[in-house]
Length: 429
Image (cartoon, rainbow, N blue to C red; front, side, top):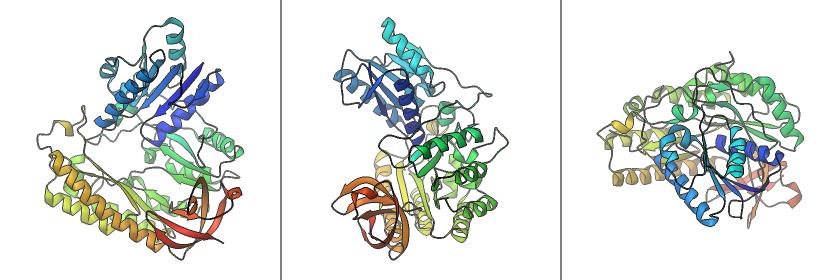
């Protein structure tokens, strides 16, 4: 029996797809690529934006057209948040949510055995535990992602994720250690700890994120520990000081900004202001050597005026971000912001996106330029082009290095000599 997986959305979704892949492999399924012929296709969905739902629908239609006889499964955040809408999609023969991932296997087997449509979406509840799952690695990737937290209780006014993902749940420390040791045994030198609200790790266990970071950095053979996206105000000065003392910790901080305007941050129900964000960034740069700050910025939030936007853009330039994901606000049914009457017109959002991208590209160029002349350790990927193999430094600067094929997957010392486009170029030391 052949099965194919297609993943939309975040690194947590990618991790969960790998977990599902291994689950089906153990049950005797053969895993193939989505473009190949299969008996079952699984779409692991994202519902952060309405365009995410649209992508899921389009993918389901394409897969059904590609192989009408196959069973098509829709799983993940979209059906969990909007079960009625998901249930009305005719191409979906099997529908499960983001909770009880392991239940997908039985749902698929039932649909194959009976030919019936199967809908099994388990509701989240306040006292649910972290769902036990692990992976041996991510196929085709030099670094592994490891999910250590699920759920969010922040209730930002634009975000449906608390509905889609439920309350905060954390992976126990011993389970983290066991999985990390397995990843090291499978040859991984770098692991990225990820979660839906990673900064809240441990809230349900009487622990904190720093506990997981310290444990990960103590695992023998693991040479790099990196963090996924973080809520900035949940990083204390003490946490940062302890992280700075860990040799294997990577000083790249993806601090979710969303807006550089205090008025907009308050309307978004974010839990910090620009002054606090600035203080945290300054503290990171004080205690770490050559760190990078990356972020997400939304433009066109309801009520955002031209003055608010200019203020946000100026703040982003002041911070000197190493890389920024800029995106326009998307109205999300079921959130407080969707009900506001002061929605920003689409052409205005598109124009602001262009300007914000131009501004943050300049800070990106400045950051890359500041790396010239430095000698850094680079984890080489398996992707090669005319400049050589690409790799990443501890602060996640992309470097192209001309070197021997045998060094792929290795950590090597490189002197950064130039900037070319959106990456640096270096020579092997």
